[in-house]
Length: 336
Ligand code: GLU
Image: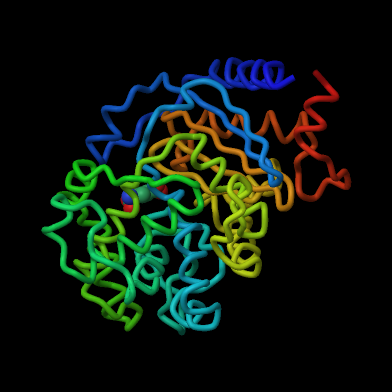
């Protein structure tokens, strides 16, 4: 039966692969040079079943898919009230790297755009963490950046159920031209929304974006959110159920850049995409879904990934607002 589910996933990949429109992200050399024909899809259920197809061992940098997980860690570390004082909860309707803050409060609008993600990054509590995220490679960072990155790397590894690593070369490349994110961090600082130095926040945020994952890793990380914060594979609690629920609310309203409304209406799965070509979706209590294909649409989400999600949502009735509640794997088994 597992084999027929994998065959089904391969079929979804084949159909979504017919659309070869879209472009690779150009502003980070590592992403610009990626193999645009890579494609992968993975499912991980809240009760620990997993299946995948395509280039499911390919490692890529997590980029913005790190944002919901780091938000969840910050919620767990310092509590919703303190996080909300610094980072809002409203969709921005703007591009991911817009230089904008909420009128009146000076907070970034939400943790899924870069302004909010850079602020959220600096909220995780790193005080009790060591400073060795990668040994030698991280020595050019300040102790504060290193311990924060250690906390985030350990936290994301717990979501994935295995020790993740950072692509230090990709981080260096991105940092070398991080003018936009530096501008955002300076804007935050000038409005009192950043308690650390702008350069340190951007350094650490880019290290966070450079954590390497496979599509299977991010499916399991998504499944941990689907499973109220407990990793379904090893049973470890990574974050509280409340932090998982709050994070899913933010993903539903703000996760897909400036296409979040259309995504929730048409596909109906709380989600987050990243500029390296990944997308995760979480159906609470049910399943984590992850796709990877590097060609991006205008909003910066994977063209083929969006097609894969649309396909799965339609065929398996995964839309949150649908009145059918199904068990995804049972539904697949029934159909195959
Ligand atoms: N590291 C990227 C940036 O901050 C992430 C962007 C994304 O994945 O949307 O520009």
